[in-house]
Image (cartoon, rainbow, N blue to C red; front, side, top):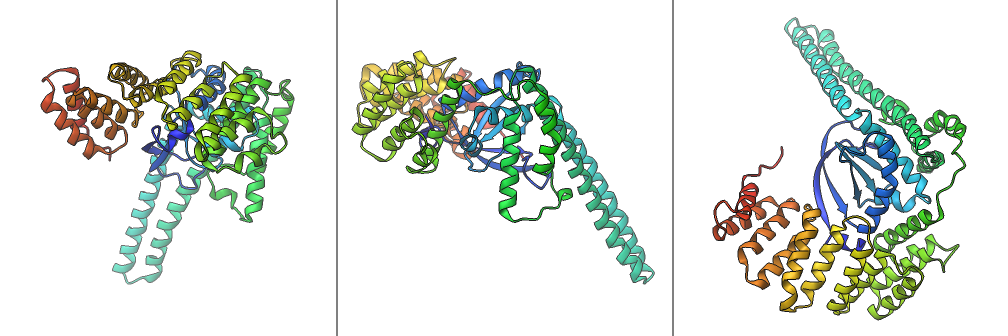
Length: 455
């Protein structure tokens, strides 16, 4: 669950991304704190699945990544859609997030990133040519002792760069308009309302007004929120699905997600504030159980989650929370049983839950469960190979079994997926010395040793 962002599920990636909300179009190296959580990922996947199918992207390997950031934002990079936790917790309905996903899918389906890269190259070329012309004029002015010509050269260089920048920003704004309109097509194709998109733009417009900042619409990469509302409102309201609301069961899952994120990232009082109109509802109780687990007595937290389980006995993530609480209470064998139940109830192949199960088996300290812990951790990591902290538990399990070579290799993998390449290569070297040359483990260690950091 989300607490593992602070413990075992934390990953920091270095990503070259175009940030949609950035005023600069430059491609930059961004350090992004990525949250891993089985419940939230399953919900967001359910939001995205029909949209990606409508966009013709269901077989394109699109990933949705959760970013630990309180701002209301989302962006795309390659085949990945990044959603800020701030957007997830502030969006009051599933429809708002679905609208965001539809917009980002429009960027991917429309090939906007590749065209933006081409526009960047064009803008850079224009800026370089302008600079060269300006330098030439400046040199000529200096050679003829004509100060006016030299000043004109500086003006030409600066003016050409500004023209290129404005042209690029204008191009980005046009692509945003296209993605907005395409998103409405996807929502109509899936029988969903575009009301959530309008709500999102209203929120952005309100935030901009409250900030008191006077923004030049020609100096930003996105159309102004009020402009976007004006462009879309008539089109959205024409849809026969405009007044369609989200199914109650989906709204419940959404509110439970919001409660979870609020409890983990905003403190114990965030959940009561969020659900003050329904303090005894399931989402409020769920957030309270998580807050109690984080800061209170495990016995009390266990009572709270078990009370919820009586209402929702087949919810896998309540069983997961129960397992987390039991781990904290040093009742690892019972925790392992709770994780096993969560895995049995969860949709798909829940690799993250399997890693949690393996961790609980390891925590029992029982030699007869160590091999099972290794098997479960390996299976989970085969499905979630970039889940860096899972390798730490695998290394511990191998170490307790006396398999030092595999322990070193697992440690190397953990460092590698955390971006700590120097440490990864140190442990890969240690692992290779104990592994049979040419074996799968030896070859994986060699891959780590031969890896070259981008840029």
